Length: 343
Figure 1 (spheres, rainbow, N blue to C red):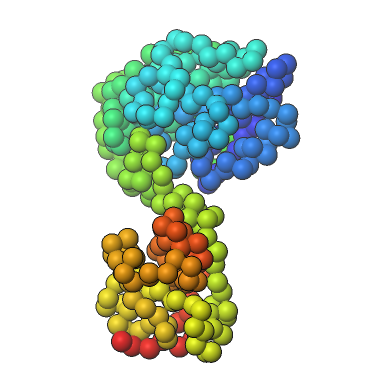
Figure 2: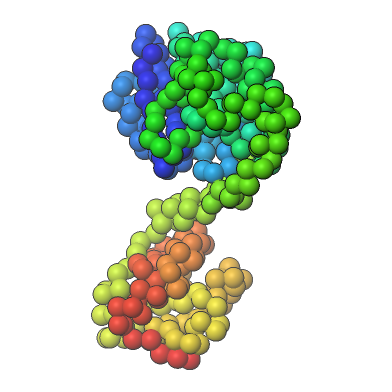
């Protein structure tokens, strides 16, 4: 087996490749590491055939949909996963063949109802069912402490104690453990009696993950994250620096239409000299009357540079091929000492 482990601020993902055929699978990929995975696969001479999520993640954005689409790879989940983009759903006990490797699915609900562990040769990828020195939480959507107790004590912990444990998270820099080590030393697994374990899990009172709502929305629906939308928009437009704009404002460049897409109060409080006001929420409805010439060079600005990026991309889609965005936004313009005038 060709094996790579990639850590992203505590989130763990894994690239497994068949040393004979060089077919590969990615387990629990993180959207932030897409280029890293492709680089590792290229370096190791691997072709990623499958992308697998051990469960519906609530604390980071899965790269499964994007990688599946970009690589023509099958997206693998448990059959209970809500992800509409999954096209290979495993049931308990089924085997996925990746080249000459055989990966066995073990349904282990508790952290989520679609949680599964994957057994591959001398190791088991436990998702958030079993962590090093801990277990997955059960207070997020579809979590169930009673189901987690059953999954741990009646299933996962009955596997070979020598199996290496590779979880989906570890925040202390550890790479792996073993089933035997976790049985002996994991504090949560010392509560073996069902009632005591369930009571312990219900009393954890953990803080919600930072990106809980957005992560669940995107991972359950296949929708885009806000960062993805901004990245996609930025890839399709040009930007103009503050210094370049300052020079054009100074000479009152007649070839440039400066469009401020902030709300009315923000525009009135202070805007770049020569700017025209068209709130982002009204852009599509008023564009034909406000901007009748699609060949004009349009520079869009907003407070932080995010909304203007989306607005400039929208204008380009509407046929304004010279639309660009101010690099940095009006906040950076203000902090750099460039002039603003009230309405």
